[in-house]
Image (cartoon, rainbow over all chains, first blue to last red; front, side, top):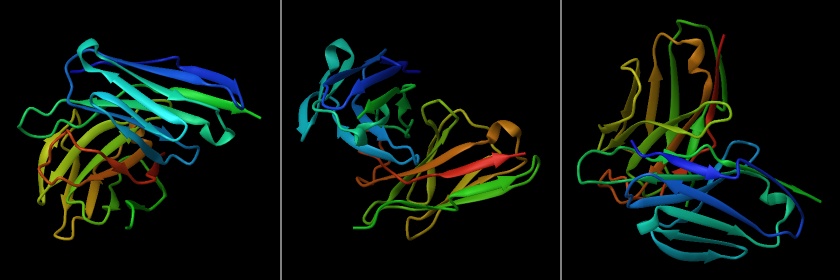
Length: 112
Length: 116
């Protein structure tokens, strides 16, 4: 199956700092999503981005499918950005669903 | 537009028992998938339901089973509970209806299951 590696595993920053989270994957995909899991366990969908670049407020993401990686940028961090960020990928080939394969996540702590 | 809701939020069972977890999909979504998240790990795909039939399954034994109802809500059933089944169980819904993997997923808050 597809392997997903996220880096760094842990990141501690001061409020206002910028950060870049990386996701590498081992095979071709046609589905890539970034999620933020808050301390209560809720997974919030940040981006659906199998290729290209998207921006949503202070967050942006870029996926270079040919090189099998994606980056999530967080600018001007706030304490509410703390939590675990997951990259998840999938390949739909027209048959049954195989689900998304998640990485182990990046644990981000934003200190005031 | 209502989001994905799951019940119960927490559950404690003993080894060997059976458990049923419930999920109501987001309004307008007709595909539901279930994931298991062990402590400190990313979620793992259990199975997906589309049009009341299982149309994809991850590497989980048959004692993990499910149902999807005409209103697109879903249940996850786990028989003969084992200690390793202790985890956060997440339900996700999506909208295109073809049961494909190339769809944006919306997750519920999960059910935390503890097996003693």
